Each structure stands twice: as C-alpha cells, then as structure tokens.
Length: 459
Image (cartoon, rainbow, N blue to C red):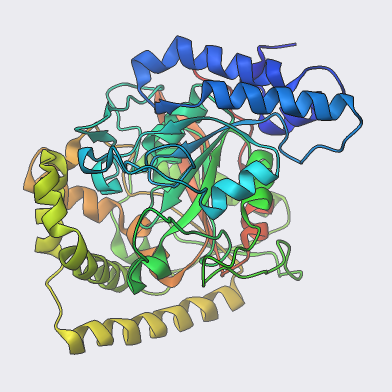
C-alpha cells in the first residue's frame, strides 16, 4: 500500500472500513507528513496533534466495538484560521486577533466533526483574508508546493498548499471572491465554492456579518479528487439554525439537459493561450461524452464585479478600515487602498441601488442557466500569478483585478463554482472553471468527474 497520507479521503475511509488501517494510523501518517513538509511550506499555522490522535483512538475503539462510523471517519482535514474551532484562536492572519479564542465550533467545523473528520491543523490565510496570495505579519508566508515562485493562492492558500502536499486530503476554505477556487487553481488541485445557503456559516467570536458578506461568503472544500469534494460537501452541508441563509436543499437536483455553455474570453477578457487550450480540450471531452457544447457569452460579469467590490468595500470601510491600519500589515494596507480606488464609496441611495442591480443580475444568470445548465469558463485570465504580484505596483494590482473577473463577479449572484485542474505547463498548474445555478453543485461535480483526474501528492 502507498504511504497513507497520499491516499484520497475516499480511499482512506474505504481502507478504514475494510479493516486495512486504523484511524490512528491515518492521522499519524498525516502528522508525520506535516512534520516533514510544513516547515518549508508554512501551510498549517496551528497544530491539533493531541486532540486529533485522541479522536482517532476513540474512533478505533468505537469501530472495534461494532459501532457504525461516520462517512469521513479517520480522514485528516484542515480548517482555515478565519473559522471558529473551539479551543483555538480565530486569527484571520492578524496579530490583533491572536488571542481571540473560540469557545464553540462554527457550523462547518461541527458538521465535519459529526461526519467523523479529524482536524489535524489550521491553515494559513493573508491578513484579513484579503488577497489571492498568502502572507501575514502574524503567521508568515505560505509557499506553493508545486512552484515556490508562484502564489499558493488566497485567501485559502494554506488549505490548498496543505492538500497538494499531502497534509490531509481535504482542506476547508472560504470564498467571497475566489478564495477556494483560486488557491485550488494555483496549487494544482480541485476546489468547490458551494452555493449561498448550502454550507452554514457563523463565527461566535465575531459580530454578525453585514448583508454583502452574508450574500457572497461561503465555506467549501479543496481536495485532490472530485470524489473527495463530493464527500466533503455532503458532510459540510448539514443545515444549522445559527445561519439564517442555511437551507435544507437536496444535494442532487432534477435531471437537466446536457447542454454546456463554453465561454473562453467572457466580455473580452484577455486569456492566456494555455488556458484557452485547456478550455477547448475540456469542451471536447464533454462533447465526446454526449454534451451539446455551444460557445456563447454569459450574462454580465464586469458589472457584477463593480457591484461586488462596491458592496464589499462599503462594508469594509465601515467595519474594517480602521482595523487594517491598526494591524499595520503592509500587504493589507496596500490592497485595501487600491481596492478603495476601484470602488467609490456609495451614499445610502447608491447602496440600495446596488442591491437592485444584484437582483437583475441574478435574474439574468438564472435565465441563462435555464438554457445552459453548466458554464465552462476560465478560473482566471492568467496562469497562477508570480507570488505577491498584487503588491508589486499599482499597475500589477490592476492587472490582477482584471484577470480575476470571474473570481470576483460570480459570488455576487450566490452561484456555485468548481475549479478543476486539468494539467500543467512545466510546473505551473492549468485548470478550468465550471459554474451552475444555485444548489446545482451536483451538475458541477458530475462534469468534474469527467474532466478532472485524481491528483497525486506533490513532493
């Protein structure tokens, strides 16, 4: 048998159920892998060794006694430091929050535990989870395990780097503007941003989120196999009354026509030739499997970007601007000031108008998905960025924002999105993005099964 840490979560659970391994062995292998590679990568910044081994031993005793274990029993996972986990600080990469101890699990953590997942560590994020790059003044920088010159992505860069390097087969991430989908892309793995309302969210350590963040921010899994994303989503998606948007919607929807919309350069985006080729190859695979593929333009995206940024920055100016300067993280300050340049502050009437515009955009996108149940499009206009390119200059920042049009715009409508890694150019990952209507993650995962192979551990 290969090293236990290199198995997918689905393989781990099957081996445990067949009596071929133990929960302790699975966890111990993952922790040994953390010892071996995390000092170089800095993906996990809070460790949970003692608690993880105790939980593994308890599962082994339960299994020996004939008890039925959960669907993720024995599976080592990581949790992003933006999310409450009882007994650990919810730092969000901030010195200001290094003592902000959680006394209760957030819903997504509670759901993973209930399914039997074993938390082995907490993963790094940029300060305020504000970038597609991962570095902060509290925990330091995370390194991309595939190519140290590239960003590991952000804000769930630690989660993606941990998964790619074998420090747990599933990483928890959050996504308000690509923070699950982009790190998966940058680290050469797969990542699912679920629909608004699919995975419940609440942090008792923080205040209730304002309306823009409520509508756009979700939790989702990063993994090396599509089957693992499906497994993790099933575990994460148990409704919780602490989240007013949480909805008990079936994970499998009604049959849908096999019509795929292909958009290689939405709204005139400049898209790297390697990404264009990956999209064409993915479309050919889908067509060979019986999908009707039409090359079309999707509903407005740049308008969605403008609304998303103005909502996000209006709320950040009110609740986070002073904290950004108090934290003093140079990356966060640079990004915040440049985001403010892209997003003029609305007055009250303008703020209300943003929600009217959002309603129209949601309606247009839902009508689009009635004709084409799945959209195939770029993750980003560029291959994964050179590390910290966004803070190199104002022009670099603007280029990053432009390339990330699909990362920023799609969450405004609460849509699910799936990053599928399809190959590489040298040691630079290449992938595509699938998008569907709200609560149709099943369509994304079904097509993802066709397009995305299981990915070996790197290193």
